[in-house]
Image 1 (cartoon, one colour):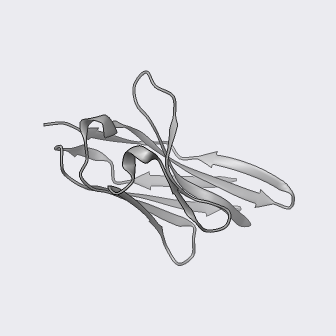
Image 2: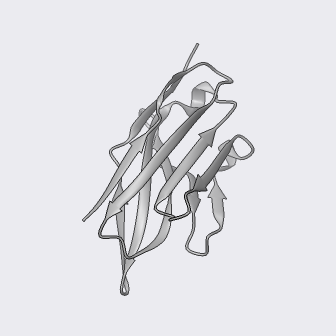
Length: 119
């Protein structure tokens, strides 16, 4: 079993910054991909930023130039630095980790952390 623990959400004014953290622990063999998704009220969950299987990064167009994903040396921790936040960034942010067990990929989700951008 794998556990993902997120932290760093909260209330921030437009133009402000927040940093999210996610640490994976448990039966981790090989992390295939790890990153962040978000879900706003009444909307589908969407990709925000991830590290892919070849260690490259992908960002949603809506956050490019404002958000930066990074990770720790052990690669089981990811961070999301969010700058120039906008009200439309308000959502529950979920950490996701895809782990390769032999030839099987398994996806795990954190419990989510709320980000509210409001004046």
